[in-house]
Length: 225
Length: 225
DNA sequence: TTGAATTATAAAGATTTCATAAAGATATCT
DNA sequence: AGATATCTTTATGAAATCTTTATAATTCAA
Image (cartoon, rainbow over all chains, first blue to last red; front, side):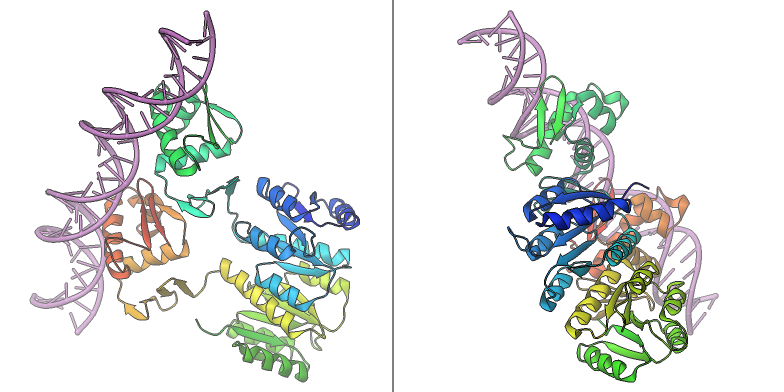
């Protein structure tokens, strides 16, 4: 298996360094964020396998970050805190924190809790969720959300959107898209694409006349971002 | 829902009493064992929803009990210990403990950790009773209720509904549903599904013409929500 | 800027998929 | 066996989706 990836959200550089050294020497890949905002962005753009979240962050309190994360992130979140504050512990656990450690923590215990949390989360089946900005696609349930609202897509629309998101940033040619969705013999039916891209835009774009997600690459194809 | 049942395995009577009072006043049903052996027997004869296990037991060490329990018991086990011993914590978590608390513990934190552990375990594991909005399904007695009224379902209807509720939110394809309910060779008999979905809707939906639970995903299958 | 090529959108027409009733077949129970 | 419940099949109209056509808008290059 690949290295498990852990995102540290903590404003104290020395703590991040300490965690980084310990985690990397235990074969985890480490990503760091020094503010809650940065952590949210990093976790959304590339969801880690576990998040270590400091509760005492400067920009937003860790509790708010926790709540925002839990709206879509369902892997383990372990809370770190300097205060040994019971009500903090209680509210964090009630808000979906997986575990809680107070600083100064012993690294052995931290590593054990991380192992335990990752093991448990792997037991619960792996939900493949693709997130591109405000668009969430759950590939197991075939559910698409935009800003947490469920969007009803037809089968073809869904297939097209899934194909786009799997190739985020790439220009996909008309030929390729037609071949993948409709099949080999439809490679010249460019008008199909135009119609379906149109309906998709109406459903997922804020302003379909000025699309931010499905970009036209004239003469070539489309690009999803 | 029924009260969650918690088994305490601890040799100290005063600790058991303290836990019992706290847990019962928070609406848990409490079962007690004063030795590891007794705990193993009790948990096997009537599996609780969560186990609080003291690590320092006289007959067998808590670690051994933990290992024996984990051979078959997959609900949460929270470890209690007087020693704040790091290697104990590490080995307990590695042996499948859900969580770990050192005595003396604060009851608020304990209760929060219990809630958190039970909530997490309910997300994953197959509950005996599935609740989806106004629909209750008791998987052991095959009884289905809607707004507390018993609904009479045929065997096939029940199987279909149970399959739906076990996969709440997911789109289940025609193929999959047919294979699961009727068998491998029925994967093309889509009309069966339509008929049975129709009768199910009549029985469980408020307004069968505008179904809120069994949603059709045209061209793909159905989704239960 | 102009005109051809490309793209977008609306909407009509065609097709597929779905829901429902009901008849016929099979199984179950007394 | 006879009655009852359940399952399977068939038929039909409704709904959703897909395809096609027509036309407007946009893009791009000379």
